[in-house]
Length: 318
Image (cartoon, rainbow, N blue to C red; front, side):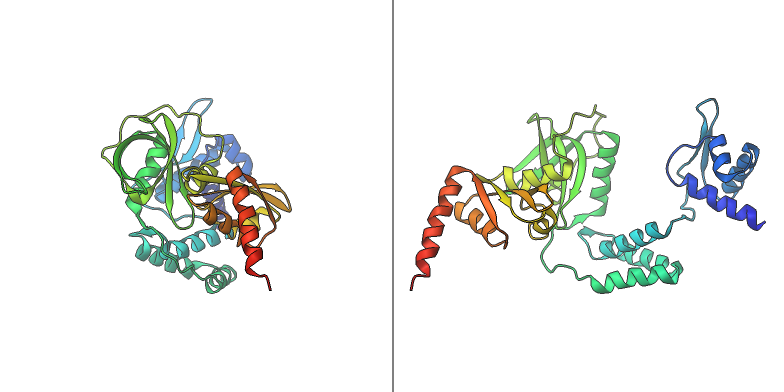
């Protein structure tokens, strides 16, 4: 009986990897016969796990969605990741899930082995949330947008831009991006025939969602980089390009994702693209980072650095 129970747990772990398994594949992994696999699948169904099966040469098994939440198997790293995610969610930028996150975390920590519980507790004790305002969004709104991205469904949204202008847009959602302070949606704007980035806390989707669409070729940048470019560079009057003499990870620790786009050159340097409506503001933004750097463009920004150089030099004359 102990051997059978252990095999059922192993079978469940394989099925929870969200992929299709043929009977022979599972039999090989479990070192049993295909007939035994069929019997074990029936036992999982009796326990409430919705295991779907298809017949034919391309047939196999997949763990489906059921009417209730069955027990879930997690390995050590997955359990720690879920626990850390729940801690973040309890104090994060998504409204409506704080209390449920705390309850779920309490349940998980209760059954974690001691070695894992100590890892999670140590991380929580050593982590301090940054005390700065963040735009919060509703969890239902995020799941609605995520479903539209997944199912390739058009959305009509009411949107308020950063300057307060209201508009109605028809979009094809692509990806959600979280910068640490805010949520953004990267989508194709059908009316403007171009890719755009929308702040999630400023949009309200119409219901129900629209018809399905054929996915378009996304921007050359990955969704996170595209959002950083749109938010921190492209919408400003002046767009600066700098070479920073520091690793990209060190620069990213001082430049939030919504304040500039960072691209590694090598292990010791990176390119920073940042924008501002003020030449002085853009110059000081980079100068106070604490890294050696070279400014490349635009030309008026290069000239502004020369002006600031002379002004600062005169300020310290004895």
